[in-house]
Amino acid sequence: MLRKEVLEEAVRAQQEALRRTEEGVPRTEADEIDIDTSFANVISGIRRCGKSTLLNQLMKKAKN
Image (cartoon, rainbow, N blue to C red; front, top):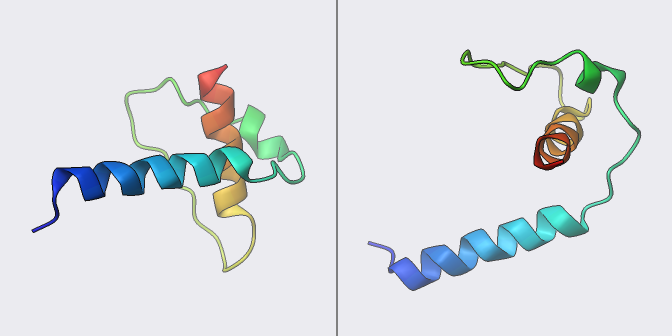
């Protein structure tokens, strides 16, 4: 079982890595996705098509 401190450090490291990540090319789909819904949003696509980039842009949009 993981110790709480190890898990907290992993979360902090991941959050810092996401903050340092470049935003990439702005995705036009980011404006069309309603993130304030009570339903799940599914982002699907082929490998390396920008799903993670879109998700990072949505997270930054949600923080603002």
